[in-house]
Amino acid sequence: MTAAVAKNNSGKSKLWKPPIVGVVTFFLMLFAIGLGHSFMVLVEHWLGQDVYIASIFIGAAAIVMLWYAIKSNNENFQTWIGFFAGLLVWMTWVEFFFMFYGRMNWGMAPRMDGADGLRVSGTYPEYMIMGATVGLLMMMMCFYTFDKDTRCNMFLWFQKKLGLQKGLGPSTKISRDRNYAIITFMETIYVTWFCYAWNLLCFDPGLVGKGDLFFAVNMATVFVAFVWSGYCFSRLIKFKRTSTALRYAIPVGNIFWISIEIATKWKLFTEIWVRPWDYKIEMSVVLGAFLLLFILLILAPKKPSEIGKGRPG
Amino acid sequence: MNRLIKPCLLLISLLLLSDIAIAEELKLPPGMGGVPDIGAIPCDVFNKMIVVGPLGTKRLLLTWAEGYYHAKTGKTINEIIQDAEKTGQSWNFDSLTGHFVDYCAANPEALTAAAVSDLGEQLLNDSR
Image (tube, each protein chain N blue to C red):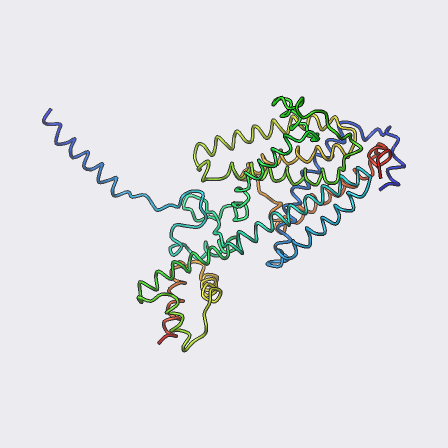
């Protein structure tokens, strides 16, 4: 990766300039979310009950990857590994562990749907548990909101509106002090968690019923998700640095995905990513597209600051 | 005015009766998992429920079965199992609910009550 970077780091590429960097990272993120769903169902399909044991080790392997990335001083490497480690830990230590507790340990029954109440809904036991974690999610949001070193634009906006900036004082860190592996790792997990919880609350018949309120909440959600992700996308396409764009694309892609989840709930299209064995060709194309964009981003020219030059370590 | 009283009373009576006649079906609180009457669902639905809620769905049907057997025999499930084990195989949660799973896999059109009944016959035959 470093050789490719060194060869291309002039910053004068005609291809890798706005809006290409933002567009590529956005689509990469959408493909990654779809493939993440496929990975989960395939691993579950292949391993059966062993998936719970395997998930302990897959998650641990992701932490080892993260450890290597944290030791690195290459921001681009840190960002990629932080992202992949975050995805893996979320899928294994969160989703599969919730699955174990809901299905195999506590013996929860699935939530039913349909006019006669005899259709198994998509809210499986693990998602019923996940819906209950919203308080923990809000607790962590307090940390990010009141942390003076946060650089997320949304939390900075909160701090400004809450009049916190004077009390918190200036950040004690500049960009070269930051370790982007752990930042991207936590960002991937937190954003995924947030979007899951948002979706689950909108679909929870115990909270929004199945009638007018359900429809209104879901319509409002699609509107908010579209406007929010659209606004963030308009910022994303101005990015020049691939590492920064990749980190920014994580929330943009995930917030946009909320509308996709609701559209599939309304049966506007089929969730091919949760039935990859039925859509082998389509999901192979998605995988190919993801790998192509991944390789393109790896080969894209980088600024010296992205590859560790001028950073401690 | 008096002529209208009788038709009005008749109409009100009919409305009250129709309200009683169209009783609402039993439904679970919307946030819950499971079905209101696990013994009255098609095996095909049970087969799908056990994919995502294996233990919970099996436990629901076993609980239903325990009530059914008690109503038929006056015995608890433990008493029935103890009697059955004297001459037949030993039983536990997995083997009892495994019988439901096997029956429903082989008879997807049947109701789950038939799976319960089938197990009950085997248990009672073993205990004789």
